[in-house]
Image: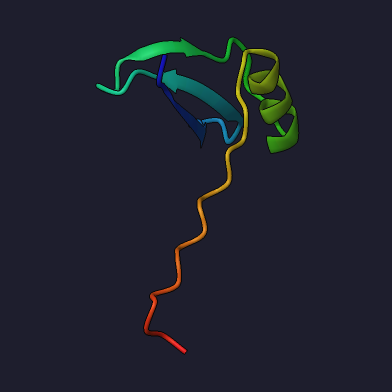
Length: 64
């Protein structure tokens, strides 16, 4: 299933995550808030988050 992961800071300045459907409906979200982004990220990874870096842009054939 395709989904979007959102990481954000809440009103208490704590990190949280949400897993969203492509229509932006919430599928799942963190039960806890985290002071450090890394701990929030680790919790998301436990729930299935995998980092996929952006694809490099292809160079144009005529560029030098």
